[in-house]
Length: 198
Length: 114
Image 1 (cartoon, each protein chain N blue to C red):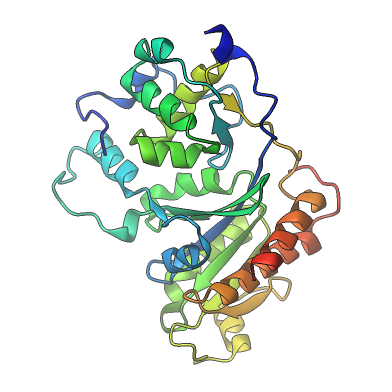
Image 2 (image 1 turned 180 degrees about the horizontal axis):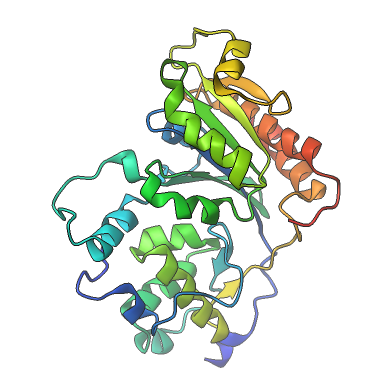
């Protein structure tokens, strides 16, 4: 007991940072996280399934709930004392309170969009425009590596302010994803002053 | 999922749903030592979290997922474990997630990975 309560001075204080990966269902959030994570994206579906059993007596406990309720996260160790976490947002509206929780303390967010189904990412864009202070960028996921729509056309369709960076990415490609994460962080640098309170 | 489906979450936390400290999903927790005697007196959920935290610093979300304990319950139990000195909750090194020193370090780290 006494030994357990003495702080461990030998372990350096490891710092963790977090980025949020948002976007509608099927836009490639899990794929993107998996492309850079050193652990398989941890699927937290179990929490949700368990929660719905408890709070929702009408839910069929045996029904297979698939990735629609998943909140995946991954981990990238950047230095001995620095870990970056990537958290994918759960897609379903019933889990929206969780978005606030995930965004608290985040260093930035990126919203993934699929140009074939832009509408599934509207709620995520709305959220970061209106309900969150976390600086965000929008990334068009080029599923087949081909850009089907000019980026500015996507900006118009999303009604995105000029101040929000719009980039393209390939969620399957590690280098591409790293570039997108760098754009997310650079955007936060640009949108915040060197010393700011959260 | 190993959580007991017959126990409602707040029973595990003594009715508490909030923590005193800001515990982000990415806040790191570790246990440098493991006391089996103390562990034996903990609830099964708290014991799993304590054991897992002993394997190395990891986020609250990881602990929750690996131990099959819901995020909210995990937060409350970890705060208790920290108050008892069993686990250590890492201090936030930077006051703000927008601190440019932090952002710069993450950017540099990612560039090295690329």
